[in-house]
Length: 115
Length: 113
Image (cartoon, rainbow over all chains, first blue to last red; front, side):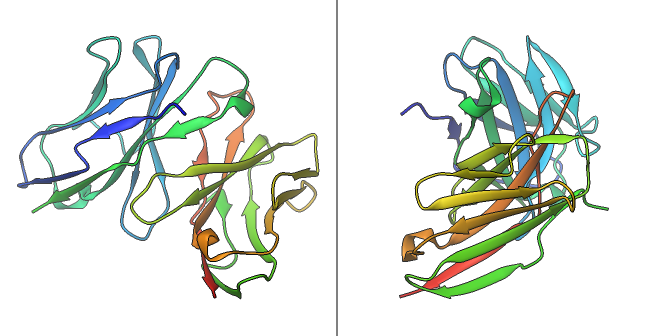
C-alpha cells in the first residue's frame, strides 16, 4: 500500500536554528498538507499546498514557516528560527485528485524537539 | 472556541465490549467527516468517513453515526480488541473550501484484556 514517508523521524535542534522537515507524498497525489501535534493535544492544520503554491494556511503558519516542493517527489517544511514552542510532532499528508473518500494519507511524523 | 470537540478524553473498556466514542462539531457548513485512529508514535490512520447526506455508515466492526440536528458524530466499535487501543479523532471538512480536515481533541481508548 502506498505510504507517505517522512524524514527524519526525530530531530533535535537548538533554539534559533533552522530545520527542514522532509516528506515524500504518494506519487500520484496532488494535494499536500502539513499538520503539527503538540504532545497530548489535537492535530492542528498548518498549511495546504496544491499546484506548486500554498492554497490555505492557518494562523500558526507565520513568517517563520515555509513550504516547498523542490522536485517532483519531495515536500518540505522549513522553520527558520525555531522556538521552544515549536516542539511537536509534524505530520505530512497527501491526497489525490479523486473524491474525498479516496482519503488523506498521513505519514508517521517527525518529532521535533527544540532545546 | 473549537469547532470540533470530544465529550470524553479517556474511555476504558473490557475486551469484547462495544465502544462508543463521541464528537461534537459546531460548523453547520461541514459536509464530510472522518474518524482517525492514532497509535502511539504514528500518524493518524483513516478508519471510516461519512458524508452529511447520510446518517449512518458501517465498516468492518465500526459504525459512524451522524446527527446533523445536534451536530453530533459517534464512532461505534464492536467487540473491541486490545489492538483498538489508541487515540481516536474526528475531523470535519467544510463544504466549498479546500476540504482540509479539522481535527477535534481526541479520545484515548483503553481496552483491557
